Each structure stands twice: as structure tokens, then as C-alpha cells.
Image 1 (cartoon, rainbow, N blue to C red):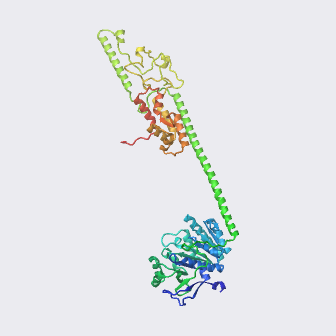
Image 2 (cartoon, rainbow, N blue to C red; image 1 turned 30 degrees about the vertical axis):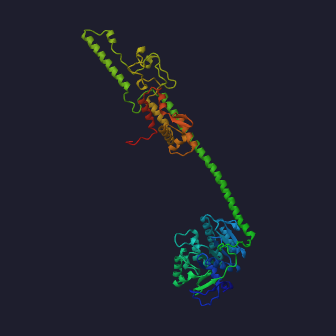
Image 3 (cartoon, one colour; image 1 turned 90 degrees about the horizontal axis):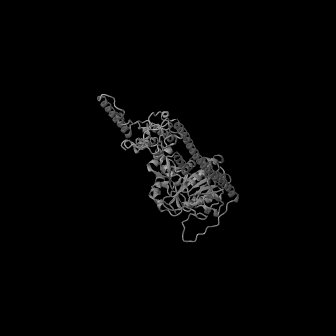
Amino acid sequence: MTDSDTETISVAEISDGPGGEGTEEPGTRVDLPVVDILTGRGFVTGKSGSGKSNTASVIIENLLSANFPVLIVDTDGEYYGLKQEFELLHAGADDECDIQVSPEHAERLATLALEQNVPIILDVSGYLDDAASDELVTEVAKHLFAKEKKLKKPFLMLIEECHEYIPEKGGMDEAGKMLIKIGKRGRKHGLGVVGISQRPADVKKDFITQCDWLVWHRLTWRNDTKVVGRILGSEYADAIEDMGNGEGFLVTDWSESIRRVQFHKKQTFDAGATPGLDDFERPDLKSVDGDLVSDLKEISDEKARQESRIADLRQELDKKEARIRQLERELEEARDLSRMADQFAQAMFQKAESPYRGGDGRNLNRPTEKQAALGEYNERAEGEAADAAADADSAGGDATPGEADDAPPRRSLEAPSGPPWPTHGLLSEGGEASADGAADGGGVTAPTDDESWLADAEMGDFEPAELHPAPGAESRRDVVERMTAIVDALGDAHHGMLAHYRERGVSDPLAAHVAAGETGDQHLAYGRNRSLRRAGFIRHAGRGKYEYALPDLVSDEYADLLDEDELRETVAAIEASFVEEEADGE
């Protein structure tokens, strides 16, 4: 057995009072074996002010005096006072620390602690984000465990407020799981752990019951004293409520008795003491080796450079993504214009080949009122002519030309010969009405002025559907099909925008674009709006507003010769290509 295996540290004296079963006299020195403290599992508990942090500091001071390394996870910033006597590396998030650290420093911290024998205070009290501090503790514990598998060097890791990592209720995060792993398997590798908590009822019982040594300071909360009663016995649960500051029950695997002891007072500055009215003076603290800090700062500087580079790359990526979105909008607009151009070209080609212009579109084959009137007129004329012929037969001869001329003239849907027929812009571009009646196939003498078709009081103005169309003009069906083809060439977004304009009458491009289920991208909205305007489906209404123009566009196609019903019917036939049918009953 080597000297290090039998080395001890003096931490307390036997105390006089109820509960202790030790055989030593009060005042007898209490020593702890160093190897069992460094490699074992310990637990120190007691309510606030009972002396648990003092006990932990006394043990740490004795280990540091003997040049044994430790790492303290300090959750409340209470242990920096150790720097009054010992050279420790104080690492954390505060400016008062020797170095600000993050999970990237974990491996280097483990190397300093185990390979260079540097005591470390890992102060996590300054981290505002619990997830960041938990990640740091997890990574440090992982690297300590991994290195100890090879080094097998006695080393103690002390965890303040251990109930936050290994709670009795609720799940554990990665830090707690790693600490439990060290508690179960660390001893055979030389890695020991001691947990400090003021609430034993909140600490996972599997951890407490597997500890090699325990210190129970004053506890008064019923749930905590119940834990004492279950582990030590009811007499200890009663006695523990009346213990003085620094007093505690010491339970160890290497001693058969439960000893009531009074721990020594710590020698270094008590940073965890409750502030009083006396002036607070921070003692002079030992500085850590500058080379250690420089080594760690290189990691911090490298992290800062990486973060700066990442920020630059992210900014560059944002610019490129914005450019991509802009190009996608321009490409979509170009595709819209290309489809529009193709459909216009097809429509113009169909228009050039159309033989006539007039009404056999959707639901347009029914006789109009004027067509019905024309039929009634012709029937009456034929009846009167027949009556005249019958009168002539009864008179014993043919009717005279004058009598025959008295019959009403028969009207026809054929265009008259003679002067060009007034088309009111209904002919296709470049189309001209023929002045030669025979050439046009009319075969009818031009009407006199008092029989002018457009001035006939009984018949009224003739619609394009009622005329024998001139060559090159379109039927209403052709117009509907041509405009429907143009609408179909547009995308769903255009259809939704057009439906919005139809419903509202007047609106702005952005509102129409959003109503179509698209984004609030102003550039894309105005690009698609421009396609609708170029097609003539909407027109500018002033101050950034646009109005629905399809009815006027259709009316212009027929030079305003359609009546209200026919215009409404033609527009509805075109609107069917972008307006969803209403449900029954609506």
C-alpha cells in the first residue's frame, strides 16, 4: 500500500450531543481518507446557513493543500474565495472570471485539470440561459470521464445544487445523465463526484443511497427529515432539527458508526456568507498563470472568428437568396408575358381566319327579341301577299303589279348590296365591306332611305348577331373562345386577382395578390397586375388603384351594339374561365 493510499485530511472533531453512535470522545479529530474522497461518491446536505458549503470548502481546502486537483461546478458564485490562498482557474461567464468559457472550451478545461493538475472553478452562475450552462457542464463531465478511462488519476468533481441536475421528480437532461454515469462507473477510473444540496427530498434517491460518504447538517422541513429517518433512523431525524451551525452526522463506508461531528471553519474568504451590515471587502485573490488564460483565449478568439465568418456568410447568403427571389419573380413575370404573347398570337390568327362575326356563343343560339320580331313581320307579310293573290284569283285574273306592290316587303338577314354596310368597327383589322352586292352574295336591291335598316322604327338597330356578317368578322362564340384562351394562358394567381377585381370593382394590386392566396410581395403583385392590364381586363383608376374592365372590353369588341342582356351573357361566358361556380342555393 502506497503512502497516497493511506493519506488523510482532517476536517472535523467529534461533537457532543444526541444522535451520535461514535465511540470517540468529544473533541477527537476526524480524518477522512483522501483516496476515498477523491474517487468515491459523496453527498453533503443541510438547510441554508447550516454549514454545508463550509463543509465542502473545508474538504476542498485540505485537498488543494495536499496538491490534489478538483473541479467545482459553482452554481451560485460562492467558491471564488478559494483564490485567496490557492491558484485556481476561475472560468465562467462573468467579467470577474479569469476567462469566459463555452462548450468549445470543455476539452481544454478537462486537459488542464487532469493532465496539468490545475484546480478549476467552473462558475455557471453568470449564464442567463440554463441550456448554455447545462451544455457546458455536460461537455466538461464527458471529457473528464473519457480522459480518466486512460489516465486513471484520482480526481474529484464537486457539484453544487445537485438537485438541479439529478432531480427526484421529472426527467433528467444530458448533464444529469452524465453525472449519474460518473456516480456509477467513475470510481473504477479514479473519477469521484460529490453532490451538495439543501433539499435532500428533491435529489434522486438512487444517487444518495449509493454514496460512500454522507454529511447531514441541520434540516427542518418535514419532507427532508423523512429522508433522514428512512436512511439513518427516526432518532436521527429528530436530532437533526436541533443541530448547530457546522454540526452534522457523518456517515462513511469505512466506519461502522454514525458520528456527530463539528466541522472546522474554512480558512479562505467566505463568498457565500449572508451579507451583513459590516463593510464588505474583497480580499486579494491569487492570479492564475497567464499562459493558461492565453491558451484558453485562443479558443475564444477562434470561436469569435468562426462566429464572425458565419455571420458574414449568413449575410452573403441572405443577399443571394434575396437576389434569387427577385430573379424568380422576374422569371415568373416573363413566363406570364410569354404565355400572353402566344395566346394573343393564336387569337389574332384565329380572328384572321374567322368567316363572320355574330352570335352563336355560349347560350347565344336562342332567338333574340329582334329576331323574333323579324320572323313575325315576315310571316305577316307573307300572309298579306297570299290574301292579295287570292283576291286576284277571285277577280278572274292575276293581280296587277301595283296591287302586288302593296304587300309589305319581306325583310332578310342578308346584308344589302350597294354602298358599304356600316360595320361600326366590327370588321377584322384590314377587313372592308364589299360595295358589290352580287359579289357579296347579297342579291338584294339596296333599301331606300325610308326603308333604311338602321332607321326602321319597327325593327330598331340590328345587332351583329342579326346581320349576315361581313367576311373577316368574328362571331360572339369566337370572341368568347379567344378571350377565354387568353385567360387560360394566365396562371392561378392571375385568375384570383381578376376574380378579386370583379368582386370589388376597384382595388390595388397588392390587395388583389393577397386575395388570390399569394404573398405580399409587392414586386410580384405589380408584375402580375401588369399582365392583366396589358390584356385589357383591368385599367388604371388613379392613385394606384385599378378597376375591372372586362365588360367594357367586350362591349368595345362589338362597337357598343350589344344590348344589356347580350353583353351580360357574353361577359359571363368569359368569366366562367376564372370565376368558380357558386354552390347551389347561394
